[in-house]
Image (cartoon, rainbow, N blue to C red; front, side, top):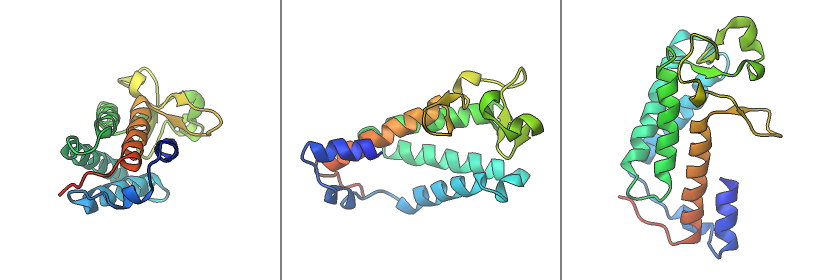
Length: 167
């Protein structure tokens, strides 16, 4: 996201363009992102229902981004990435598989919250969390990478050019 804004500014864009963006039902995406974030944090991630809430929030993000696909260049990548994450989560009992070498405490427990260790019983492992981007301590999925690229493009285009008004 920072790279998208930086490139937009280097090419003569303005941060003020971001403030002029208007979205349909902006509260929906804000609630979905906050709920998704809260569902992965302790102690909420210890509740069995948290993983279903997480999946529902992710589905809301997919729907919202698809709703804006004709208005925001690059948002289709966010939609695609979030949809891939939702697909792999739903294919694995509403849990995101994580590569064992990056799973730390999951290896001992087998699963925590909405995560599970990649193994013979998990599906669509190529879409799971297995990508390590050094120096970050986090591990990412193909969907996460697409979401990040999509957000960078949205912010680049929105910073570099006058924003489109979405009603």
